[in-house]
Image 1: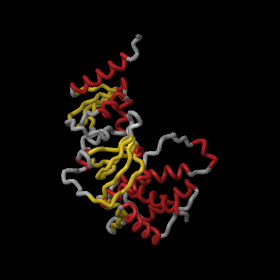
Image 2: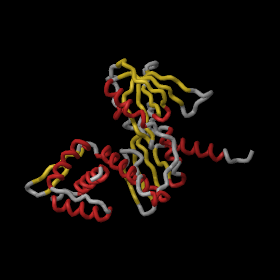
Image 3: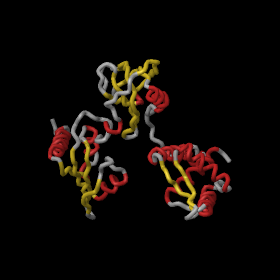
Image 4: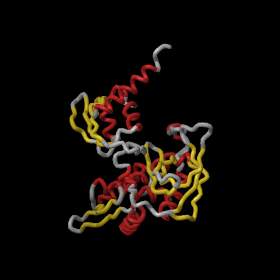
Length: 302
């Protein structure tokens, strides 16, 4: 069996047991069905399955146990479902991109700049061992080809809107900042160590953030009225973990969030156009109106 099939079998087992605990017989039937559908062989012996269970625990941090009383296998600990899902998703994309050339014209890939993941391993090494790093950083809105050399204390990596960012403490001013990985070059991991700041908690810092901006804007209760179609989209891809539905009809849906109304959040709301209306707070409603008025002024004849 190829390594590709080996990984796909792991994913099938995880998906099956996540949906429902089942007996080994039921699992085999599930694997047989997918073997026919995919024209590959995923059928395994009991001994191979037990080895798979051990490897799934080691690779994905998912613990599978057998319940004698119910005669089923079940997941008893799913360490980080989000990370595991991303790992599985990445493999599925990789597998799709490597499919037969006969289907190459049916897979359309966006042409985009690298998101800088080539630096990820080194950054995680520096974070784990508390090594100071140097790099050059190019700003999005640069003037006079502004490229700065930075010396920082790396603290965490954060994903926001399909981009990865380094969260670090600047050695010059002691301020916590974020740097897009795709704009980091010439990175050097020094042998100098730094004390991890006691006042920094990555999850707490971004708890009320929509993206990566955390400029001390106080979080507020925000109410939005969405059209039926826009609500369906936002339900499947929530704006924030605090999102909840307050009221819903066949025409519209009112959702409530608790976060900081930063610039990146306002830009996201504006992208919804007429499908969204801010109900609360009044200050956010005014910002949206002012931005829309400035946009309209750009189209007025000179």
